[in-house]
Image (spheres, rainbow, N blue to C red):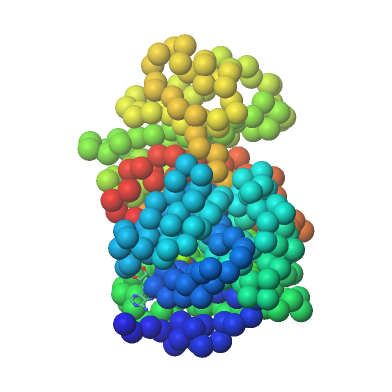
Amino acid sequence: MPISKMQREYLDNANRRWCFKTGATRSGKTYIDTLCVIPKRIRARIGNPGLAVILGVTKSTIERNILEPMRNIWGTDLVGEINSQNICYLFGERVYCLGAEKVSQVSKLRGSSIKYVYGDEVADWNEEVFEMLKSRLDKPYSCFDGALNPQGPNHWLKEFLDSDFDIYCQKYTIFDNPFLDKKFVENLCKEYEGSVYYKRYILGEWALAEGLVYPMFSREKNVVGGEVEYKRGHQYYVSIDYGTVNPFAVGIFDFDGRSSTMIKELHYSGRDRDRLDNEGYYSKLETLIGDLPIEYIVVDPSAAGFIETIKKYGKYIVKGANNDVLNGIQEVTKYLNYGILKIHDSCTETLKEFQQYAWDDDKPKDEVIKENDHHMDLIRYYIWTVARQLNRWIV
Ligand SMILES: Nc1ncnc2c1ncn2[C@@H]1O[C@H](COP(=O)(O)OP(=O)(O)OP(=O)(O)O)[C@@H](O)[C@H]1O
Ligand SMILES: [Mg+2]
């Protein structure tokens, strides 16, 4: 079977206690492990004392990322299923398959001697789980193979990789995988363009999330002008970020079957004006919507009281938004780059926030500065909770 130059290099040189493949998404890291590395390491240690283990973020990601692809290559006789004791029979060996999200999930390994660990998505593990492994790989033949996508440069794993432990470490870019379709790579590059995700997932670097969150936001691609009018066949949605002391921010989105345009905004700051109660906000919301037929409204999930107020009137359907900040930002990045999220030029507060919304580069993990972010939040709620569903066959 043909393999890439980097995959070949790994097979030839990964003979340290700790062997890693870091880098871009889809770059061929896991493929060579399921095809070759895992079976070879397991078979070489069969009959020797010590546990064999596969660790992933959760048991289901182990199944999806590792066992299923391995079963497709090797068949069900050699690659079993994870049973109720977290054991899976692989190439004739009992292998523990455990989630590494919480240290309690790997309590089985405490005090055990380990002969082999395969680690999937290692940068997403709980650090304590990784720490524990260091003292458990105690046989002369014990070893670890792992793959991961890089995160920020202050990540705990980066420190380990730069240390003088007995480590072999490769760094992949997406261009190191010759088996990917060119168009697929082109699209992925476009999707991440200008963002920290480009550096991490395309170039495979441990890049800091710094500066503007959406530097790719462009007047040309993402701003529209002209008359705002109701269009038959389009769908309309409302997204709300709720604040009492902080601003109450509302956006109305027009979905044309592919693109979403924010056509109207409301920015009400109780700091500068009279504070409003939920009834007051509801009446502002009704005025903003006017006669537009609204499919449903998504609201800041922490605003339980305001969600109840909307429900009480029974006029609109309302849902709590999904507030997954980092995945939401990554999704918004993609929509901006594809030009399928546009802002009407009358939405001045939103346009202003796009120029201000920034990463907090003093933090060890990816975090945004929580200022000037109300319209950014409502856009995220809309894209991650609504548009992602509407566009699931397209992007
Ligand atoms: N040697 C190969 N021969 C044929 N196809 C390959 C080979 N290596 C990789 N591929 C293809 O490239 C795709 C991506 O590879 P792989 O899943 O190993 O990427 P990855 O680096 O683990 O990505 P991620 O970081 O997203 O998990 C695979 O689904 C497979 O189709
Ligand atoms: Mg992988």
